[in-house]
Image (tube, rainbow, N blue to C red; front, side, top):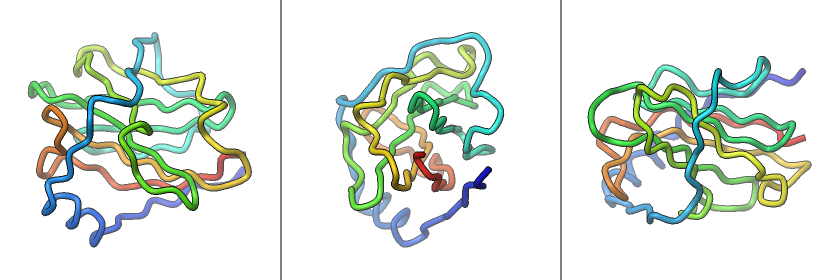
Length: 141
């Protein structure tokens, strides 16, 4: 089994926060589920928002870890792509919901490449300062 590499891109992180990049309301809304991501999922944990990618079924998992009125989201992109609003999984359910999932992304996430996913805490369409977790890179197949 391949291990995922956690990468913190300080330059990218600083550029996003300084520019005040707005992420639109487009993308996917996570649905509530019982339990969490399966064993072996590539995850970025420990931040205000947490996220995982599961390559079997192409699912993005997201969890809000703070009861602060903001929402958690996970943005993703594959090799050769850039971050975009339509590749974001939003969890509007709050901390009490636990893990939520955006699944059925098999036609959206390319195979035989790498996916980078980035959990973040958002206020409306903006990343909350200090609310972004480390980016994680994982193979998609």
